[in-house]
View 1 (cartoon, rainbow, N blue to C red):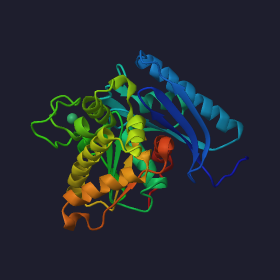
View 2: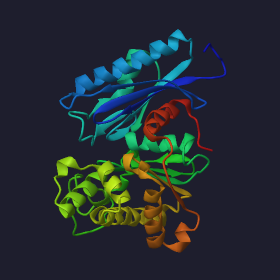
View 3: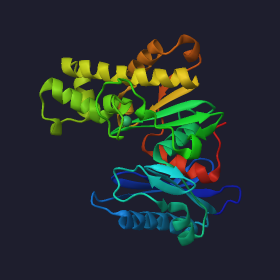
View 4: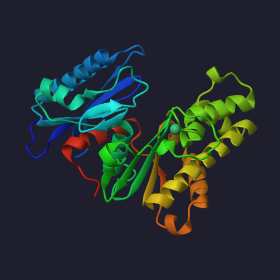
Length: 315
Ligand SMILES: [Zn+2]
C-alpha cells in the first residue's frame, strides 16, 4: 500500500466499558488496520486516557509508515457529549466526566479530534456504510446491557438541544414499572427489553442460576424450542416492538436498524421485533418503515467514529 493523494484516512475509536477498539479507516470506508485494548474494571480516568493515547499512537505510527494522509481522530464514547466534552452519564467508566477529549487529544497528536456518544457513532456507521446506507431518516437502537439509540433526520444525526437527547432506551413503556438505571425513570424500555433484562426474566422464570445465563444461551434454548426461552423471547421482542412503535409514530423513519450482540441471533429475532412494532405502530406512520438488523457488527463504532472526521455522508 503506498501513498494515494485522492484517499484520506482517519482514526476511528470505539470506547466501551471493557475494551477500546480502534481502526484506521479510509474515506472509502475500508478498514486498513484494527486494534483493541482492554480496560481494566478498576481503570480510572487517567488509565483510560493513557489507553486511548496508546492505541491512537499505534495506529497513527502504522499509518505514517505507509505515508497515509491521516486527517483526524473520531471518538465514540459512553456518556453525554457536547462540543468535544464528555459531560457525564458514562456510568460504566469511573470518573469519566468533564473531560474535553477533543482538546486533550488534539494537543497530543496535532490533529482534529471529534467526539460523539457511542450509540450515535454506531448508528452513524450503519448510516454511512451499513444497513441504513442510502436512507435519510433512520432510528438506530443497540440492544445490550442497556439500550442505546441514535436518531437521524434529513441525513443528520439529531441529539436534541446541546446534544443531550436521543436516549431511546429511556422512554416509558410502563408508568408503574420497574426502576431504571437512569435514575428517576420507572418502566423504561431499557429496564424491560435490554439483554440484561431478558437474562433476568429468563432466570426468574426458569429458576436457573442467573450467572450461568447470557443472551447466547437463551437464543440457543429458543432454537431448541424450550418453553421458557420461547416465552421470554416473545416478551422481549414484544417489549422492543412497543418501544419501536413509539419511535415510528414520532419520527416515521425509513428504516429502524437494530444492533447489539443479540441482534445477530438470526433473522427470526428481527422478524419477531418487526412484527410486534408494525402491529403497535400507527399504519399511517409505519407505511414507509423497514425494520432490519445492523450489518457492521463490531466495526460499526470505529467506522462511524472515523466518518465524524471524514465527513462521509449517508446519501
Ligand atoms: Zn431509564
